[in-house]
Amino acid sequence: MRYQRHIILPQIGLEGQEKLKNSKVLIVGAGGLGSAVSYYLTASGVGHIGIVDPDTVEISNLQRQILHNEERIGMPKAISAMISLKKLNSEVEVLPYPDEINYKNAPDIIKLYDLVVACPDNFSTRLILNDICLKLLKPLVMGAVAKFEGHVFDIIPPYGPCYRCIFNEAKDDIGQEGILSPVAGVIGALQAVESIKLLLKIGKPIHERMIIYDALKGFFREVKFVKNPACEICQKNED
Ligand SMILES: [Zn+2]
Image (cartoon, rainbow, N blue to C red; front, side, top):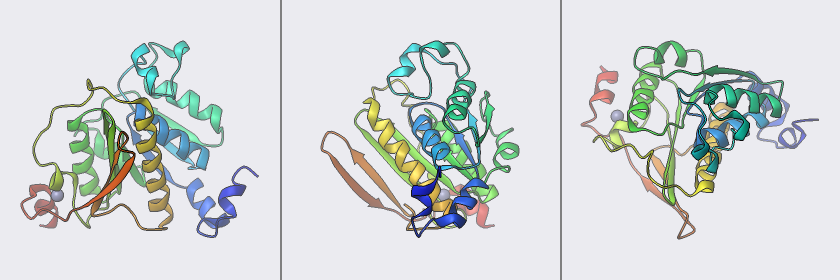
């Protein structure tokens, strides 16, 4: 009954819904993007969800991080996320990681999952996820937002470009920039869509291309890109 509207879709059906139930997705970041991704994947019946975030809930998060609420200020975000997600769908197993992900612990965590969704607020975590997912051949759904814009794309190792192929120069972290609240919801929802497509192997992934959303112009555009021959990490993984 719960997943009736999924099951009547021929691309999903009972078989696809069972597949989602047996799927394991790691969401890194329980902020604005992570809120949308985790709510939609939990509602969709992805059976096992891990959620990583080292921070605690602050009042300034509530403008866009809809997993959390006023009663949870001071609580680790990973725990607050788990409580919200279990209330939405008690059948889903939610594993909170209230720690920072780094090169040391990432392989042991990521190897337990089928797919990783990148929702952090900093550049260095994206690089860690990229490098470890490339090594472990795990699909990685990238998303980022700032001000009135956001983008989303899939990394599917060993095929196509990685994050470093595109963003090979270190950028400043975007955490302190302004962000229009629902823009995080738009991009997070797109990341949830891509996750389900990749888990079920349906449709055409946002691969070797990026979808960029400009909220002020009310416009989505697509940018295509390929593997960068100068990317050190891609070269290393091919050796
Ligand atoms: Zn690369």
